[in-house]
Image (cartoon, rainbow, N blue to C red; front, top):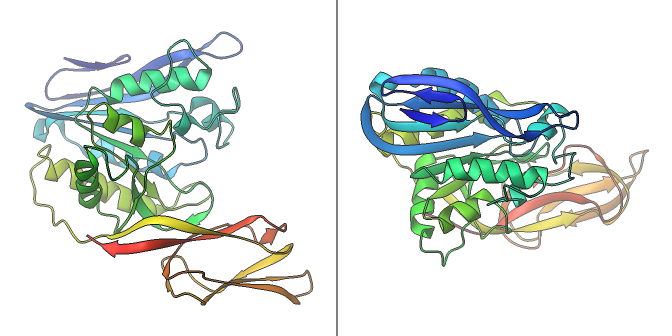
Length: 318
């Protein structure tokens, strides 16, 4: 019998339930939706979570489609799922937990006696570190962004190669291989000996079916490659970046982009222009380096100095 919160499944069974992580302001319990898929045969354990940031819903779309498709009778090993991590932010469709104004993916490994976010992080981290592999499903918030996978442990980490392989198997086509900030699950998981990746499934308001499709495909790639399910996986060469050049607006006004997401850019290529309300060009911004147009803001209006877009640099194939 495998248990996560109130979900409990014998071999060959699936169960859903709730993981209690604290109380709301009126004293009612906070319970995260969880699932246990316990395979009929022995094997590894995969942990999957989504909505660490409350407005990043593409990962929830993946969970929503993947869980019903996994037949525990055909599964070797176990899949543990937390469908919504950032309970409070999800309820109000905000990025950060409004109770403590915290970005959840900066709170790991958590503290069971700490802030609301730290308590949620501690409970989900305990579940995650029971696994052999971790998928922490994200997206680029509400910005426009390429579908990619992030390896955040850093190139000198002892599990860097394992995490990079997991990212390649997931197979979005693009990988950011850059050490992440403290408190990320994709940093904390490898420190506990568990290869962890952070698929960033596009960026949108609500959810995007194409990014969700890539996330579903990537999850099943992992399940098949690591022996949870039968089937072959063609592991393809990925485009890897090791960092970003970020661009802010030199003036206030309205942005017109000159490149599409995913486009290759060369140094000196036009990235965007800024106009006034009546269409007069106030500023032109060009690329400082060769790279890939990776991410951009969604709204056209900007203040001077406000973030506009990112170009991935130090790009290679692996």
